[in-house]
Amino acid sequence: MKTKPYNASDYIDNPETAAAYLAIALEENGMDGFLRALGDVAKAKGMTHVANDIGTGRQSLYKSLSENGNPQFETIMKLLASFNLKFEVVPQQRQA
Image 1 (cartoon, rainbow, N blue to C red):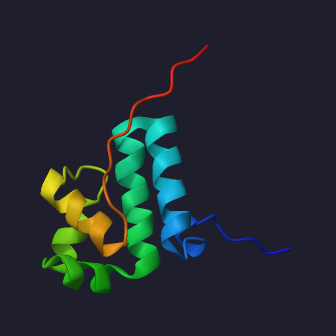
Image 2 (cartoon, rainbow, N blue to C red):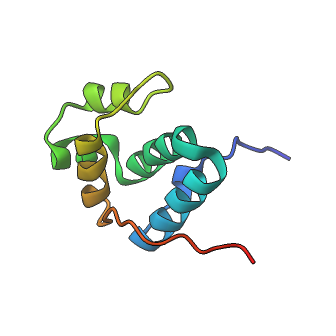
C-alpha cells in the first residue's frame, strides 16, 4: 500500500474549515501552531493567489509564514481577510 504524508492544506476547502483549524491550532499549540496553520490555509488557497490578495510577493509570504518567520499583526489580519475570516476577541468561558 502506498501512502503519502498528511498535508492539512489538502482538506481546507472553505472558510468554516479554515476557521476551525486555526482556532484549534491556536488553542492547542499557541501562536507557533497558529502561524503554522496560517501557512497551511494559505497553501490550500494558493500562495500566489494569497500573496496577490494581501499585496505582497509570494517569496515574502513564504518567508513570513516560515518556521523562523514573524509576520506583523497587520499581515495576519490581511491573511485572515483573504481567507474570508475576521479576528474577533470574545470572553473566555470559565471552567467549572
